[in-house]
Image (cartoon, rainbow over all chains, first blue to last red):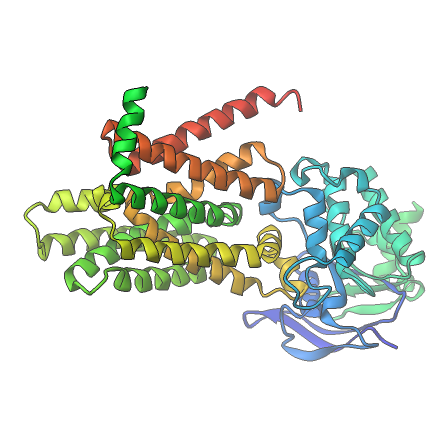
Length: 235
Length: 283
């Protein structure tokens, strides 16, 4: 019953090796944080899981009947989006695009799905608003709603709180926690924030150049990397 | 006023004036549709670069003198569109530089060829006409009009069919790719169709002014409208209105067609920007 299973992955792009010997697995209902320094290969790992890059060595297998179009993905915001004229509803609906296979237009089901997910994240009232005029936290909710439209079982998030103010970041973590606990969605999140990882995660993957750690939170707190952070937390 | 209307009615009795109107409406419609994703994806440079390429291709076509010059201009421009897209994606700076190289080389080669193998005594007139549009819009044959109609149906059809995907790919390429839309295919499709539209639009406003038809309507619509659908519809309306107005003015006042249309676009852009400034505090 593994949703994702990665064995001895060696990651990279354009022939450049970024990270090696990464092994981890994700079970339904898990909340996995992927932490590590800048350039350690977190985003590369995410792209490999999504099938946008292929690993140099090792392999990732999708299990439990999981298909690529059932993975929800929240990418980092791009420059293009900052002044993009689009209504919230248009953005959220675009998450439904591949839901019903190769159909070119949105079905009624798709529209209902978009409405339900906007409701879930409390952005229904913004449905007609312009995406570029929203606050950072609201924009991130819109993108999360879009990801939810595509996600049936698992949600991948790439630095969802980057650039948000502390309050909005807290709200974001709270929403994701609820999605995980109430709606049983499996979460895989990339983050810089090890203290948040210790607070919310069920499992942690810490990517380091040659020695990556993977295990549940209790085990992580007993490693040297984890001890550093739990000490900071206590002080 | 009555004199002007009488004059227009008189002109519209000539088939070539009617052809010119049909063609300019269709071309500006297609150009504005494509302009929206191009501007939003920061691909406006492709439109600009391709128009220079089309000029070079035109020079080659005139020398080779095939049955229809489109048969030479279109493939060269489409090929360069693909080339530009590929290099543009690899790295930002290299893409920029390679575009500049391609643009100026096409201009230089075009002018050189026209000069060396000149077929008419008035070279600078020919060059000027190709760059800034000419009376060729008023010398269209029925065949040209049909080519234009078929192309427009093709472009509009593609845009409507793939509307949702074009939106998704334009808004967020990585999300679209991750959820299984082949973003690179759609980029290629947009670039190829842009190349075809540019080749057609060269007749209307000339090679140097083509990018105005692509960029202005989208930018102007984005001043006021806040949804993608709104921007697309508004861009199409602005474009058709501007081209028609520009064409009529140029017929009445005897000004060059291309520059009149572009200046009309500029005026509308200025008005929209003004309206946006005025309403900024209130919305």
